[in-house]
Length: 67
Image (cartoon, rainbow, N blue to C red):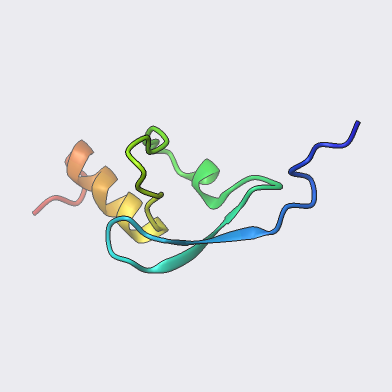
């Protein structure tokens, strides 16, 4: 049986934080898998954060890089 996401194209998303367009690879590991900070998947209809916004949010939540 073949995984239906095996040949899925990269999704183009607009960041829920800043609107920057970025990609999400549904057929393999996404860039966010390499990040140490994790957010739950959005359930309110919004989409994911771009790498910069995820890192900024992580810094705010953990106090890293806070001024």
